[in-house]
Image 1 (cartoon, helix red, strand yellow):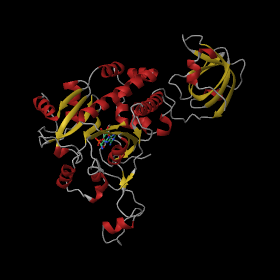
Image 2 (cartoon, rainbow, N blue to C red; image 1 turned 90 degrees about the horizontal axis):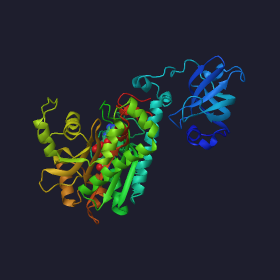
Image 3 (cartoon, helix red, strand yellow; image 1 turned 60 degrees about the vertical axis):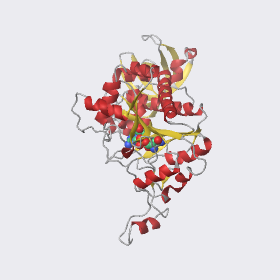
Image 4 (tube, rainbow, N blue to C red; image 1 turned 90 degrees about the vertical axis):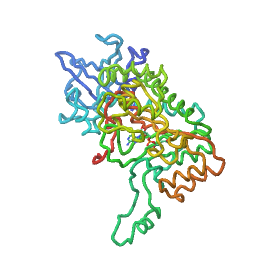
Length: 458
Ligand code: 4AD
């Protein structure tokens, strides 16, 4: 179907006074005595294009006016009669591509985000979701550009796994058969299943990413991870997109630098490539958003040890629901306090107690902590989980033993420490979490096309 994208029409003043064809959906329409006006949107821009109809030249125009109707419009592109710096089409020919009856749910100008969640197949046609998904696309591209321009190789790690990675989260089992009473035990049941052993959807591509990094040096993965946690919060989904770089010859400070640079590159890309969308979010989702992001790219992130964070929390004039003691996991309320009230900017919390972190993290010389860091940002909380990996075979085996882990299941992973082991580090960034941060959206369900959460699958 020959036509021009509305974004190109809006950006190319050379098209003025020429005949153009556009396609799109009717967002709003207005009828007056002699003229009718349609705001058309084709999803390439947040801005709509005005179609002007001279009623003397066209009959039966009511079929074009219903919200949601899809149209093909040919006409002359002219400077707008009223809006400065804008253009409109004086329609010569209009074709209805698809009618839209009045039961179309998006009749009102503004619906609540909660209501829109009940119509995921249509909510993308609202300004908010149009903007969210365009930003999501630009962020994804910025991530690839960041790594590709720094000699990282993009690796696709398996989504079906036989290891539970690190106990990063509850896993979804992958099976083709149901358990039946005929099996003597779980082992026999697993042996009869598709892979001949227990399999699940991966919670992280890290362990396989480390395999690749031990040959390619610098790699990143970017794909879905699955977690069957029953955390019904505005920050958790069961299926999220996970960016996981893994870097050989890198210690914790090196990977922290990469993580900070990546976040800044993402923000710069969004500010540069999505000015309209960011203006929209700044106005409707988070006042001061653009200024906040500009401050983030122009300043260093804070770095604070876990021990210092605990000191701040203990001294805080606040009643936390979860008590604070050295050794405790930081809960959302603690993370919020540190990033929003103490640092007031993104902060890397480093050197967590080894007991609350994963087996693969490098053990610090103090014998109590590991070289791990979480990046916390105001408003969202943790967006990155990061660590230097334990490169010493004996220490790794010891950490696994303490956790009662099976050495056979991690045979390949362990072998990496035998054959030319090197210091290496990596992190995981949740795509939806960084999108929350850059858009000011409040709920993770609103930055992914079809959110999968506990008790909810459309
Ligand atoms: O901190 P996590 O669990 O770290 C890992 O999975 C490591 N293996 C990463 C690595 O070192 N390669 O998860 C990393 C990030 C979190 O900071 C968060 O942004 C995101 O993944 N994340 C989730 N996002 C949405 N919903 C969930 N249920 C998430 N769980 C983790």
